[in-house]
Amino acid sequence: MSNFYVSNAVVTAVCILGLTLAAWKDGSLFLYQKGYGYFEHPGIFGWYAIQLLMPAAIFRLVCRAVRSSQFVKQIQKPESLFDFNKDIFLPMVAFIGFKTPASRSYYSLLFLLGFSGFAWNTYQNLLPNIVIPLDFWDSINFFYGYTGTRLYKFYTHALLTPTLVHIFSGIMWVYIVALRRMLSRAEIRILPFNVDRCGGFAFASDLILSPVVAALLISGLAFFGNAYTHKQIDISTIQGGSAAIAIVLAFYVLPTFFIRSTILRLKAEEVQRLYRIQERYYQSILSNELRGDQLHDAHEYLSYFSDVMSRIDRIPNWPHVAKVFGALGFALSPAIIAAAFNIAATVFRLSLLPASR
Image 1 (cartoon, rainbow, N blue to C red):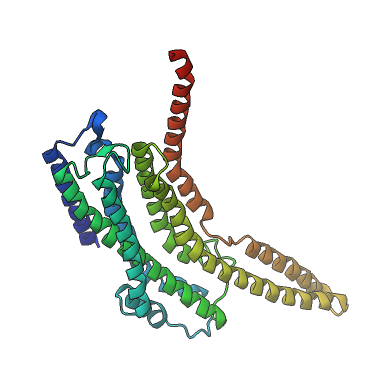
Image 2: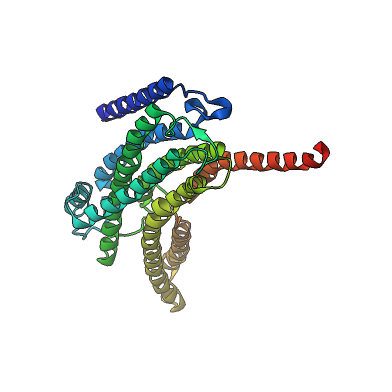
């Protein structure tokens, strides 16, 4: 495991060193009033963070996903025939390894989207001071920076990011399909007293949480970089804000929606089962057939099952929702604050125009 982290860090360091040398060779480390130099452009450092942190987050996701059999066993009913290796591990390996037509088609779509982002960035940088009203250290005016970032951004936009999304989506898809299949066969149950306080289903949301929070924080940095450098609403700044929202919708809300529907159905089934038990005890009390300890025990059971149902009702339908939306707010805050200051500064300058005449 440590070898992967070291290798990923070395590759990232080589990319950082190469692009830094390219900017130094072009004399574009700082451009001051002429535009944004290498050290004046936060966006590239956001991509360095993506390259360093996101593969590590996805690698941890893979490790946790293949070791979650104990958590799946907890929610299985004793009579369940579900097999972790056959129903989760092997389909997961097949999807990640491009062994299915759906997997290959999905990756082709992701590559197309990533390449489109790369192509738009390349087009922008061919026309500095036209498409964007300023110059950059990696525009066509700076040969080494432009050439280096074309190679780097093809790697990050068209290869790295689609691969990470493909792995994440594949794992979540396999788990969701497996849970839904177990639900349709009545092979799983809700666990009101499980230590995860999510009815035994926290492990599924935990798989989502770490990569989503990491992606949100990094996308927030990239969004801030766009807002800081572009200082206007254009395609790049819209992409920056949309990316964070899209991460929440696509990688938290969508998969968690299916987990939520499973939890809701299991909660309803368990509550109905407890109601039926309560009804039997209640009818026994009304029949006046119970005396002494039996009558006392029946009242205790009615109270106990009511407490259990209350506990079931408190199981969250959207696990970790507060953490995810808290991370979203934190990620967007720097860019929103920067935009607010830019607007305030513009309004202030406009208010001074009559006086200057």
